[in-house]
Length: 170
Image (tube, rainbow, N blue to C red; front, side, top):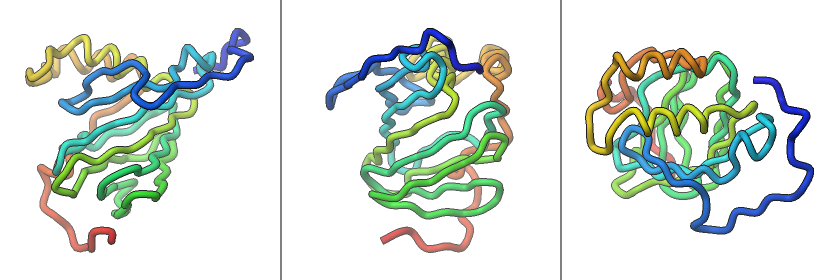
């Protein structure tokens, strides 16, 4: 997604608790700085992940993705590499990498995610509109949305796979 020449040239502040709340796969996501706010350059959102939950294995053709863990303990998989990350850790997945994560704690986890360029926030909004809250996603409705935004679904979430060796973060 190219960066628009109409990108804002003023500061943006989004206070704690502010932003656009949506639901993605049963978890809460708040868009803090949208792709439209930055002319497509990037997007920032905060996510709350339920215990033992996370997205399916997937890839983004167009976005690099960076997570900053605010609360909780997470297990990431990026191109087969297993990474454990707790509060204060930052994890990066380059575009085209096969990746997923799981909150391995017993309470909600919280992360700030930045995607460069933007667009993933638009995907989340469209996916949220396509799946009623609490409903099981219909693959026939979701596949065209994944394709539209350059995402590929590659496998199940970590919770649906056997645990591999490794130690959770301290």
